[in-house]
Image 1 (cartoon, rainbow, N blue to C red):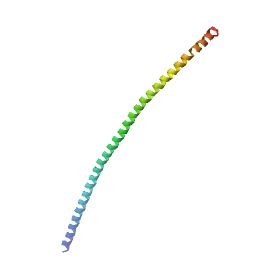
Image 2 (tube, rainbow, N blue to C red):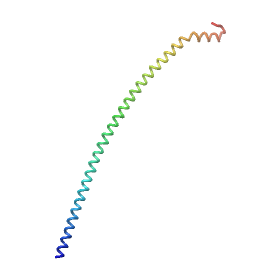
Image 3 (cartoon, helix red, strand yellow):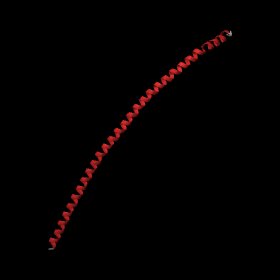
Image 4 (cartoon, one colour):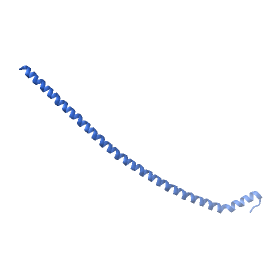
Length: 110
């Protein structure tokens, strides 16, 4: 009877080992499934973040170019006003400068 009891114990050990192997395999499969799912979710989050950042970048570019155009137009108008002021000053002082030049060249005082 001891042989039968020993054989029964071995059978129980083999069955327990097979059950443990099945549990380990199921756990590995579940882990792999969770990793795949996590990867898919991470890729979705990355894509959403990338789209958000790209949108912000494009908005910044469009604001910058609009700002550049506005700045360019502002500078053009300021430059035109400065040129007009200089031309007005030249026109106003032209006769005085001509008189000074004639005085130095001819020695005659006007």
